[in-house]
Length: 242
Image (cartoon, rainbow, N blue to C red; front, side, top):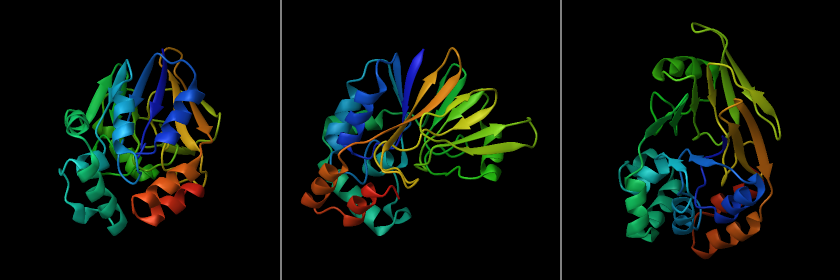
C-alpha cells in the first residue's frame, strides 16, 4: 500500500497543496500532527485534511495548544501569539475534529506519534540517546514521528544498544528493517535549511521509505502571515528553512 506520510503542516495551505500535487496517487494518508500553529490558514488546512479518504491522523502539540489543552507558558512568545490567534480563528467544527484526534495510533507494524512514543505531545527525538530510550516505548517494528521538523531516521542495529541516526535527503530511499524511528520532516515549516516542503512515501508492503521535497510559493504564505499581523519571524523563516 502506497502511503503518504506528512507532519507539521502548521496552517500552511500552499505547502500542503504542493505536497498533494507532487506525491501522485496514494492509497492512504497518515498525518503525524500539528495541522495548525504558526501559519495563516488553520481552518483551510484542517478542512483539507478532514476531507481525505483513508486518513489516519494524530494530535500534535500545537493542535492541543489551539484547543487550550496546553499551558502557553511552555511556548516562546511568538508561538504564544500565533496560538492565541489560532484559538480565536478556528471554527467550532475544526476544533471538534482536532479534539477527537488520538495522541497515538497503531497501524499494523507502525506506531504513529507526534513527538515520541514516550511523550507523544512534547518530546523531541533529535539524537541517538533519546531514540534509544524511546525504542522501549513501542512494541511495533516501526514508529513514525514528527515535531522536530527534521527528516531523520533512527535505526536500531540491535535490540539492546546500537542506534544509527541518518539525515534523510531528497529522493533517498530507505529499505526498512525492524526496528526504526522515522520522521518525514515538515510540510509547512521545514527546519533543515531547505525551504521546500518535506514528506515521505511509505510502501507498507515492500517496506520502502522515500523522502520527498517540493517547492511551493512561500511568498504567498509570508504575505498572509503579515496580513493577519502574526509574528514576522514565522514569515521570514519560510524562505530559509530554519
